[in-house]
Image 1 (cartoon, rainbow, N blue to C red):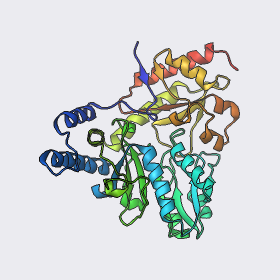
Image 2 (cartoon, one colour):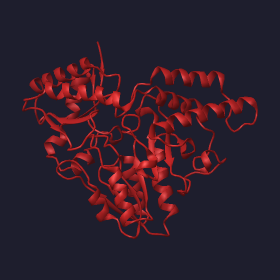
Image 3 (cartoon, rainbow, N blue to C red):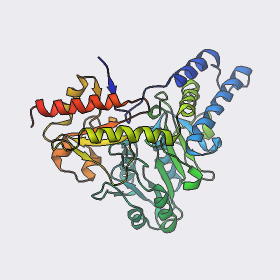
Image 4 (cartoon, helix red, strand yellow):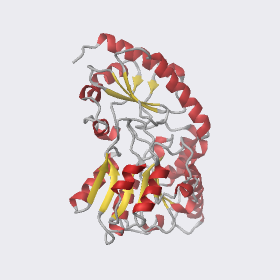
Length: 377
């Protein structure tokens, strides 16, 4: 049975270039990058090559990037590291109600520790505007954290305008952006954005699981979450996972240009929308500004898990929301104030550069078959 994997916001297939680089590193260049002998120096050289390749995704200099175990650790380091480093300046944090759990849960914990957390909600178009950020920022604001692309709806937030708003109202605050769903797919230049911190993840762009990165603008001070040998500028100590890091670099280098990817995603998105056009049994949740590679839809009356399993039996793989939510009701769609029936039946479709029009056609056929054969609640 042919399979159509359309859950790329959860994770992506490792590309051949990344797999080869990881294997080569494990077999040929297995020294500890902190060792001073030839094998250690070679490992350090390969790791720094990868640092440059990953930094290129966001137009950053290699020395502004530290490697982590993934996006979750990078987000936690940014949130806790910034809050603790700046706690004497204030305790107000501005974020959104639609962040990834690795940001929202970190903010929940800071709230328990006595910080004030302001969570902005999307309007009826599914977006959060820069004016909301500006109104929420005060002289006691020390951190603002907003994702670039929402992992469930594909909403594209105006990060540049948000950063400018923070600089106006809270010039002493740091701005962190979770760019896990954007890096490698959208043109990004961290310096021109003037962002203080930005999170990346390897397995969202055809690299391996277990590796991510945090961009930290020069001059930004964070406190570490762990202590040890001083690797990664002392912010992420411990012997680096060199095979994963080099594979991350290879995956970054192998990506087509954002413009080429956008053309591909636009074609897939159009095929899906046209294939289901006019069907009253399918409702799309399309933010006013969104990326073409993440779409959210509902077949009202058929619970997400029921349709998900129906599609999986036919070799079509989608998601009922964030992979980190473990089947819980989506806080993202709830914050958007969608009708409860649409939230309970929501599915997320997310494309990668390897998806084809045939994959989309299989999804369309599966959704139609499910809508016509499954018993509605």
